[in-house]
Length: 392
Image (cartoon, rainbow, N blue to C red; front, side, top):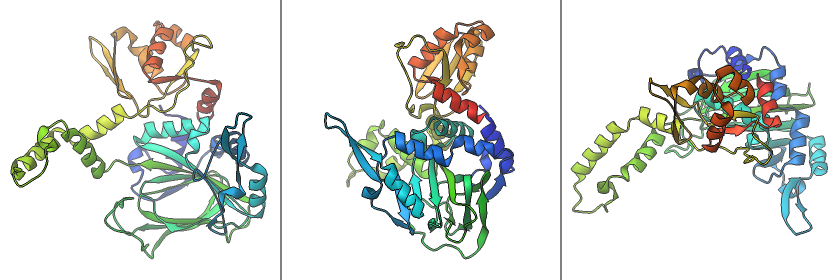
C-alpha cells in the first residue's frame, strides 16, 4: 500500500526508502500542502475535542510552559442515570486559547479516522508501531524545552508556524529505561528555523530538540502533528527471547548452588541462535495485535466495502497448491484461484466487494466475510473510506 501521503513524505524528505527514518535529521516541504490539512485542521481538532470523551493526561493544556490544572478545561457530562463521562469544556478551553496556550492531545489516531488511517499507512511503510500526538499553540505561548525522545519522530506542520531548534544526540541510541540519565544536550545546533504549514522534519531517536512560539508572532497559531514510531531494539529481542525460554524447563527452575551455570548459558546460546533477531522481527510483524475494528455482524446487511487493517503488511506466500496469508496472529490458506482476490482485499486500500467480484471472478463477499471474521479486515465505514480517500 503506497498512498500519496507516503509518496509526498518521501519526496519532501528526499528519501527513497523507509530505512532513512531515524538515521539523520531531515527537512523538506510537501509538494501539495493540502495533504497536511487533509490530516487535520485547528477547527477539526476542536470539533473532535467537543465530540469525543478525553481526560487528563491524554489531553494537557500549558500556559507559560506550566501545566494548567485539568479542572480549568475539563468537566463531566452526567446522564440521568448518573453515569459520568469526562469531556472538554470548550468554553473554558476557548478562554485559555484566547490568552495564549498550548493544547497537547496524545494518540489522536484513537479519536479520528483520518489519523487512524494515516498511522496505519505509516506502520505498513516503516514496519514500526505509529502513534500521532498533536500540538495546538496560540499567541506567544511557550512550547516545550530542549529534550530528546526515545523513538524517531516525523513532524508535519499543519497550520501556522513554529520555531524549532534541533541538536544531535549526547548518547547513542538512548532508551526510556536506560543506564544513563542522559541530561546534558550537546552545544552544536544542527538546525534552527521556522517550520511553516506544509513543511516536514524528521528527528532521529535521541536527538535533542525544542519548539516555541515565544519569539514568533507572524501567525496567530501553530498546529503540528508528531508521528512517533516505536523502534525494535536488541533489548526487545532479548525480552522476546526470555518468553521463548519459558518452553525450556531448565530456565524455569530455581537458580541455586546446584545450578549448572555452564549448561544453562549453553542452552541460552542455542536458544538465541534458533531465535535470531530476524526471526523476532518476522514474529512481531506476523503476530501484532489487531487494533479496533468496525464489525456489524450483518445487522446492517452484508458489508459492501472492506479494508485490511492488520497492523503491518500481511505476508502472502504463493505455491502451486495454495496461497497462505500470515498476519495478525492468523495463518490462512486459500486455493490458488483466489490469489488475485486475496491480494486485492489485503492491499490496504478500501475495496468494493461487488467490483472485486467482477474484477477477479471470485466471490469477494464470501472471501471478505472470512477475512472479516478472522480479524484481518474491517468494514469500511463511510468515515474510514473517506479517510483513505483523503490521503490518496
